[in-house]
Length: 93
Image 1: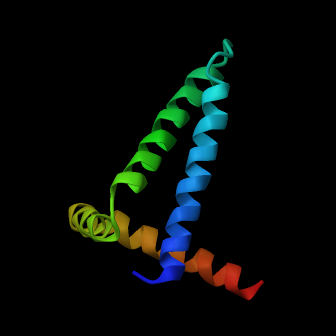
Image 2: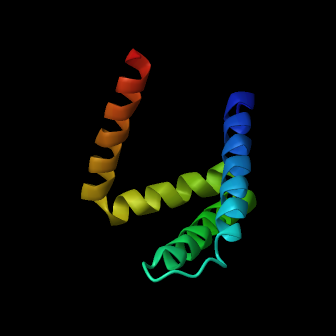
């Protein structure tokens, strides 16, 4: 794995850890609008993503991505198109 890829993966891990910590701080806020439940759900999912990135290497992530693409081909194509569009837009600016 290239050094640039490792730096990117490590930066993503750090960002997810920070988001998890911030979101967990909001868990104790009770409200009637469902915002605290939403924050709890986001914290669980971000924490789960951070754990996955921490325990997985690039080969595991690659195998999982291929498995998901085979399981959900239409959604995979739509996601790839959307990401390609967004990356193209970001590159222009």
